[in-house]
Image 1: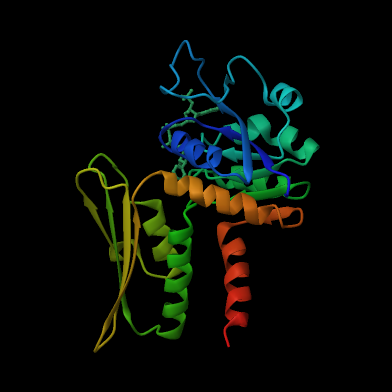
Image 2 (image 1 turned 180 degrees about the vertical axis):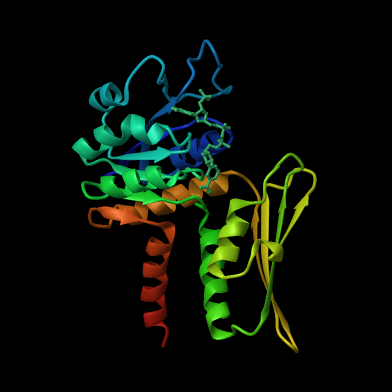
Length: 252
Ligand SMILES: NC(=O)c1ccc[n+]([C@@H]2O[C@H](COP(=O)([O-])OP(=O)(O)OC[C@H]3O[C@@H](n4cnc5c(N)ncnc54)[C@H](OP(=O)(O)O)[C@@H]3O)[C@@H](O)[C@H]2O)c1
């Protein structure tokens, strides 16, 4: 049996706790610890948690990596964490999967620089489905640039801003923000739809995030693929396009 990938997870919020559920139930990974900002005295752990949850107010990443070594780090915390663990990850060659959606250009530049020494993946959209949808939409747009394009995104009532994923789709398809329609209702986790209007037909590509565990499945996919890659900086597209190309070549 191949050796399990030892993983540390940063972030234990809405997304991180769902990601922990997925990674701890996947036999390819050994989720060794979860790091968060607060101590358990400040913010209690979720009921039923058995994994070690470490507070970064009480320990440093360097100490954590020494005491409980990992092969990979998965980040679902916030943009500033990158600078807390960056050099420790670089020195130890720890693989990094970062799902942070709000990196600045200089954060991204730093992450790319880490890719000179270790394997780094940054993905503001980490579900396999949405990345597949974006590639499929891009392909159809290339084949049929004359089709009208509209993007519809639906999210829970409290989400204030236009979805970053919808903006990324718009950018990829070279349409402006006015082509995005946002609906806010109930508890929808995430719905994105790209509609291609042809003169005599309509194509709709739809992705639905049902539970936040989808982020965990995406992180697991990214870890497994990144583990096969050479040192470097990657996006989810890079990994998925590589796999899709391999599969397309096999189609008779
Ligand atoms: N790529 C994707 O598809 C995707 C999907 C979902 C979320 N995300 C990203 O994941 C991140 C978390 O989202 P969320 O909804 O789970 O947020 P959240 O509920 O606010 O949770 C954030 C978690 O990160 C921890 N944290 C924040 N800053 C930290 C720091 N400097 N060092 C260590 N831990 C820190 C917090 O610690 P405490 O618990 O101690 O406060 C908390 O556990 C965001 O950046 C979001 O953009 C990405």
